Length: 288
Image (cartoon, rainbow, N blue to C red; front, side, top):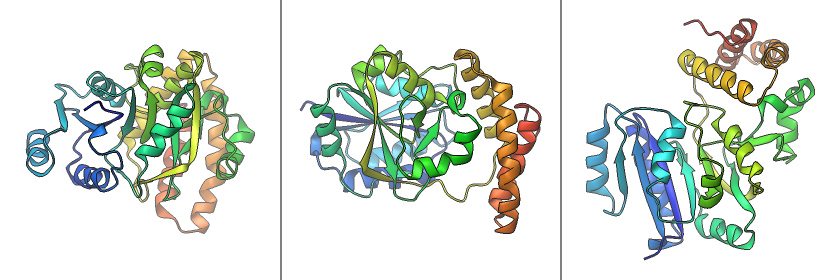
């Protein structure tokens, strides 16, 4: 049967997440065998055990790919996309859960508008589904970020979608050059958005499609903060942005946010804001 939609899931030590993710996909699959699932494992320590569990507990039509190296989010997804059959595909993180049928609605939106190159969705848990592209984010936008996004002020030139659940037209994705594998993690969504738009396709927000993203309650990971800093530097160099100005503005914002977190006794946010303050003061250097 011809596939109408593919899902690419990149895993890395994701044993605690991937099975509930798959369960939600099968529970809310409204297109039956027209759906294709590809899992790319980025060289996890639990790779063989997890793949055996998937083979045992799920239909045998899931495509399982073992990457010999962890080359990052973009590289893992590119590897998955090379193996898809459908003309439209979803990039989905293992910590995302479907909460309602969405696949038929996605297909219909792409069928109605052949200019759509990529599509973002909203998150039922209230976590961020939109961000300002860092080179387009001046001080005013930083201050009003959440308010603008909350009231649906989406602008494809200035904003990008969270990469945890992204939908692409395959031809547009390939014309744009796929994910930039020089970016290990973070900012690849802003980069692919820029390049999708440069091909003449649109990046649209589907406000009527929602998924659950398990993104709350995470403590600061200094290693990932450094990975993000390295990706940010690469992104700013690629698009000739002013990184020093970005860090100066961000330092001001996080110095304003930190006392609020103290007043609210929000220890997770206090830890996060302090880490950002230190990184911004050091213009992207993260010591850990």
